[in-house]
Amino acid sequence: MPSHDGVALIEARGLQRSYGRVRILRGVDLSLSPGEALAIIGPNGAGKTTLLRLLSGLLRPDAGEIRVLGEKLTPGAHDTRKAIGLLSHQSLLYDDLTLRENLAFAARLYGLGQPGRTAEDALRSAGMIDRGAELPRRLSRGLLQRAALARALLHSPSVILLDEPFTALDAAAAERLRADLRSRLAGGAAIVVVTHQLGDVWELATRVAVLIRGQWAADEPRSESVDAFLGRYRAMTDG
Image (cartoon, rainbow, N blue to C red; front, side):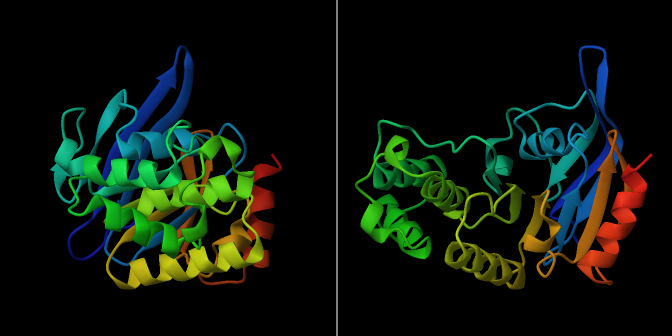
């Protein structure tokens, strides 16, 4: 990965991870500075979700290290992990708590003052102020995705890790998310987005990377059109 001037918000060096005898990641490096957004694309099984789980601290690498805001990310580094916002394939919402209760509970976990007001603000930003009394298990897939995003972002994380964030979102919700992420980038956050639909995040990305068999096959500034890049991506994966 290229080097960057200034302080890296998140940095990974030599990440390796295996499941049994299967090597998933093979020495991945990564560095993001404030205002950078990295879009990652790759075939199924390339290691994209595993990489996000490592960067969030949910998994430990077999080798290599991760630093967030200059501090090493370890299982006990709770304050460091508070700088991270993660959207994964699991919503991280409790089914027996209302959305308002879920978000207020998350605000307490992050040590935020006025958790009730924080929950209301997060619901409003997600366009879900009228859904606060609903239970996650009763929501449609699109609404659940919006609620999960609200939880991931309510503590204004410096490092935002998103796994397929536009899944099931309608056009209005997708544009609201893009506007929110653009604002956070302008405010100095760094974003890593894993996606199969590169067009959803193309205008947000400052860099685009391709992960194939646990290694970077490409990592470059966003420049050409998304169609041109996808043409080169198909050539990388056809073999």
